[in-house]
Image 1: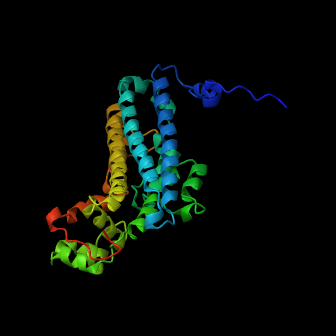
Image 2: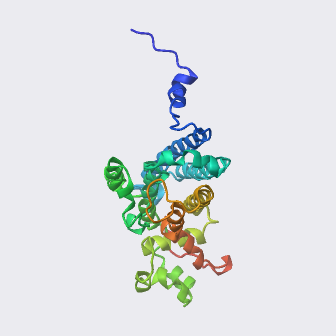
Image 3: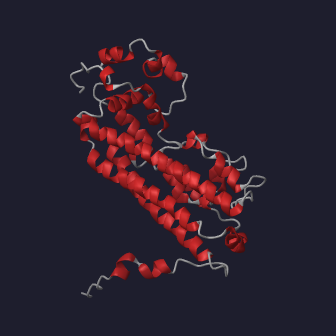
Length: 319
């Protein structure tokens, strides 16, 4: 038997091929930085996909008592930290003066960060719906992707995994199984004839809203927030908080990206080819609540009241 090659730092991490991946197409000094930063983005995006998909599978087809929440919390915490870290990468990129970018930008025509398959997969895996996205030159965003990447996105998440449900989809089902959700006496006391709770308790009022999740899921989320101090609801509350943290981190990423692009190219068209529209204007249009995956969870704060006004639950399956 041939002797197994000795493992080294270089062979394990594939350092040599990794460091050969930077191939500038111009003589501009700062193009090297531009490549490094964007490759770093993609490596971190790969980790985000790895962790988010694993959390999605933890929640898939599990009841309230059988989800390993501690494991989900650990991985979601890491996702939040990674997304915060990639925002800092933009600040490194901003050490490149705009004139230095102009020196090689024309060489990049046809390629754009807009085309990052992994970032689009993150958006879809979390739960951003295609019909809620901004048009790109009056076309769906997939039409501006590489044809092979477009085919991947159209089928993603794959139905072989969690029936193609997104993270929001599996979390929505989990929230709908919150203990105590059917405690009508609790809801009656908490409502106290105040119309502000109608969207959560009145089906007709719910239907007139622009909710992302089911009415029952919203009720579950509110119960968790109201009873966050109770041991059985502390980890679920951490999950809700982390999901909102992911949204905040992604919106921060978008905002920082928008301002960096404005600083670097002003009102020029994006290298991806936004005819008649500046890259900055398109990106700015994507900074809206349609890109907030867990917007409903943020809105639950509307229905919170002081602790002394929260009645005790009477359902024996509740808290």
